[in-house]
Image (cartoon, rainbow, N blue to C red; front, side, top):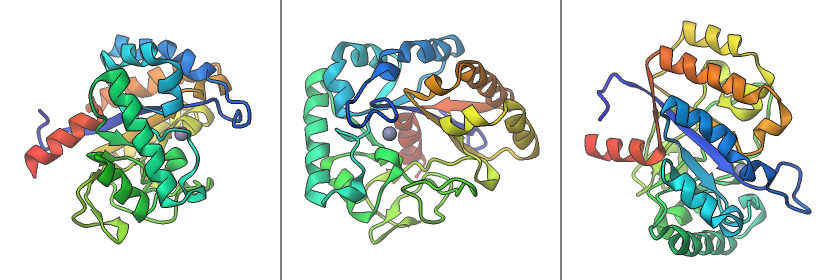
Length: 261
Ligand SMILES: [Zn+2]
């Protein structure tokens, strides 16, 4: 149980087809996830792994193995961007995912993250209707020199219930938003940035400012683009630990949030 002053780092991995393999999907990153999960094991970290239905379909026993130490959330079925689909298509993606999840893991998923963080009011409402307890798609910080496909403005930087007609504002929807919050200046603790930035920059940022809530996320394939990815990740995990951050899964943050409010 966290104390109110505890600093939280929501830690997650999106497990999906390899980047750039949309036409003939490959899943080498997902197949090699154990390499990065070994780091988590050594550090005693339990994370949320948002998997696509395609990963669940191809690697059910591997996902069952991940589920022994981590939460398994939903990252849609096919990773098609939601702005390319009608709401009925989104509903179908989520329903098929939940159906398969129940078959493989014999329980229901709690958390959801939209492909590439492309989300809107209708998609959040659909996720809530399908039965998800939390969403983690909103990126409230805008990295000044990178355009997220799904990002269009500010939002609360700590967990909040979205407004029914304006999801980037707090309201009373029946689904908790766990925003993907980085550091100030919009520098996120996310795979693409961990690959490009030296860990010393994060050391500098956290020396200046330690937000109460941050999230760290990356993809199953991030390690392919940087031989030093796992090394950098370990350094950043140690940095966060040294600053007193507790690593949490989405379901833990959700449960603590509802017990406090
Ligand atoms: Zn993704």
